[in-house]
Amino acid sequence: MTATQVQTPRPPFDPVSVSSVEFWAQSFDDREKAFKILRDERPVSWHRPLEGSMMEPEIDGVWVVTRHEDVAYVSKNPELFCSGQGITFEAVPEELLDATQSFLGMDGAAHSSLRRLVSSVFTPRQVAKIKDQIDNQARSIVDDLLKTTEGDFVEQVSKRLPMWTIYDMLGLPDEQRDEAARLAEGMVAWADPDVAAGREPAEVLTESLVGLLDIGISLAQARREKPENDLMTSLVQAEVDGRRLTDDELGPYFVLLSVAGNDTTKTTTTFTTIALDRFPEQKALLRKDFDGHIKVAMEEFVRWTTPVMTFRRTATQDTELHGAQIREGDWVAMVYSSANRDERVFDNPYEFDITRSPNPHLGFGGGGPHYCMGAFMAKMQLESIFRELILRAPNLRVGEPEYLTGNFITAVKSLPYTLD
Image 1: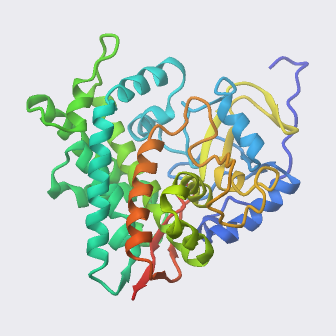
Image 2 (image 1 turned 60 degrees about the vertical axis):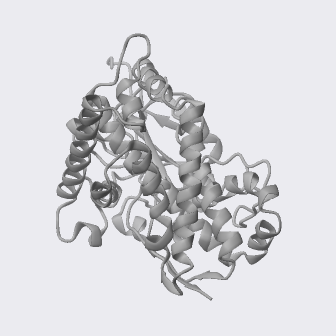
């Protein structure tokens, strides 16, 4: 900066603060009250760095973006707002970035190259195989549910299908699946007191990350030596433009699948079940004509839940967003859960409406190069599990959820159910 250049002074920190751990320990509905104020009055607002980071962030604050239009703009302009300097609200040691984020934390050619390699294995034949696996798994899960009269819906149903799908698809041995799922939960829930169990957040995250990397890399090495009919074999054998995936890429991708593949679908299944219980007329519509409604309904499942609440970008240059003067290097946090309740885009956003169309939700990202690559698989799982639940367990009732503390995944620890 030359002597004649003067940076715009920072605004005061917003009085509606989203920076405390306590804020993110609230329910979805309670957080939404704060986000509505920000959407309506200060759609791009300045906040203190978030509490609970594993290291002191080298920033003086973070911009929080809450309107649909602005979240989409940040998503679709990676040349202004990059992913390669981190995607979480908290500061993470640099050495953990590549190991935890895979192509989510990449930009430009590196992102495109890795995404193209991974995409190449999802052939029509592979996708058809995955669909058959999911249908069979969903049927088996509801078979087990129908043998009970009460329990924890998260344990009995929500967590089982995504874990089963991801690890069956990859070819992970049965005896490693529960441990991998436990480690995946630690990746997103390290701030939750019950998950941390007295440990420091960095300890929880490091243990979870190292454990998942070890499992993923060991599986990749085993498939190189002895190929099987599974996705990990396809990944280690995939080749695009003469390049193959390395262990340093396969390990983080296993972490990404374990976290994104497990927690997002688990969360959407849980919150949709709560919504169908609270909005019985919507459940009745789906039961009356499941095939006629499910494709449109799944978009509402994702909007309503918004399983990934936030993603961060970093400004690559000085720019302006909705009147806010953003400096190069500033952190810009997109709040998808707020954008998906934006009254400027959605009529009656607090109503769960399975016929809502169009439904331009940002539950799979705001567009641009980082649109969710696993959206097709999530929809397969949602269609299969709700076909079984709606048609075979119509008397399912749920109670009040116990929430997980965190600012990344909209998660529920447990959800009591009864089944007449």
